[in-house]
Length: 118
Image (cartoon, rainbow, N blue to C red; front, side, top):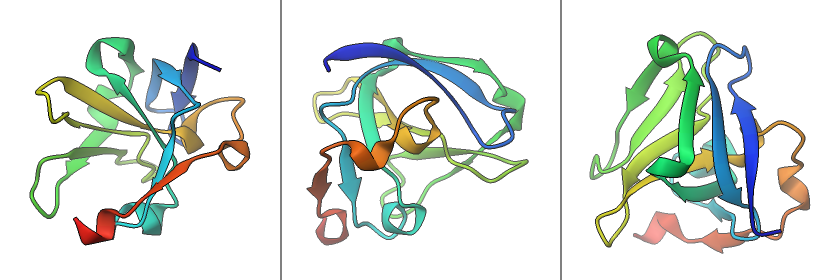
């Protein structure tokens, strides 16, 4: 697939975004949050992510080491993305592929990450 542009949103569409993602490199994670969400994640540099609408509808949640800002819609409760810093110091966005228009995340060959043991 390689890099392509995608449009996404929360369920109620109060939060919308555009992102350039490589869906050949998605992950699933078994940490206490991702497993419960059923999240399929695609990571992209912050400059390849644009929040189109809904900044005022977003709230954040941080847990464990509080290194990742989980952003979710205060209206419908869906987490379309999270923000953090990669090991090399770059600002990154983890997009919840379940929130992308026209994408079936279950059809992707995601890599499983053992976040529970980290």
